[in-house]
Image (cartoon, rainbow, N blue to C red):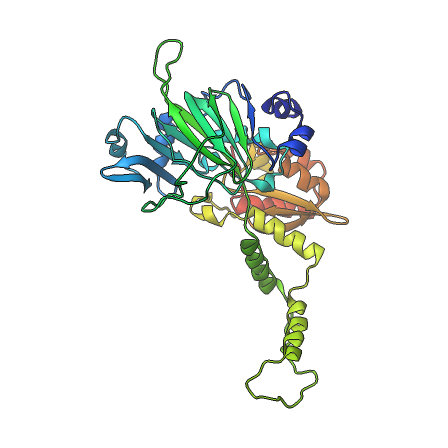
Length: 391
């Protein structure tokens, strides 16, 4: 794995990348992925866009008299034959969940913790296809899978956006740098760098036209407001505080309608009881928050109701793997570990948590050699809940 990570970053070491580039400045890496054509075909991507509950959209630069229009899937197959020859794009999000074989691409980015990874989005565009000049509030790696795309970027720009469109497209964009990416090339962009990618006309060595396909590996960047709200909800769900407000030293008010400073200070102390920041509590909340998969409940695998001995037989006869819609994370406690799967925390041994998170494919025989009865119960629960499935 280490060699793959280094190759993904070209001649730049992981330490140098994290110190000098990550969340600081763009980086172009030529031939980061020498074989990208086999990852997914245009037909497979279009097929995903026709399925229910999959986040897909078509962006058209021109639709009648309107500029920059977006259509949301699922699409009928006939929609693709009705599209213009140029200046449109198809984008499908969370491809690694719906097409698990594409998850192999994400393994090259494990120099960033798993909990930071958001999704793998893949786009297809004929010549001139684009989604306009825009910014993202998160880090992104843009990998050219086939064809060519011209990327233009700017770090100094007006954030004014176009009116009369559902897309956040910058009204004025002047490129400060630009690069033409070929298949296998990768461009890293930190948050809030304006960028505009335009699909180019391209023919392969046999003279066959090759349309532009680009993979985008995006990273989670939730707002403070979002995380604070979720943490407060977690506290409310897990708090055992039942005490109600009490007046400690009541005095007659100077005015019956006034909220005094003493009252405000009293409520600050009162609220702090319920908003106490405890390391172990934050650890449990963060693991559950980052592993949550509520957005993919419609895709959850079939649940089971089997016993441990039945699971042992299945583990020997078949290969156990993570469900592509589940997220496995862990955190160490003093004597054990907390394993987080799909927004639920499980207490396990440290070695169990680490090994079950090592890879999507589970080494069942290795697990069997050291599992405690508690670990075994967790493994059974994960299988019965559909977070672990057979290959």
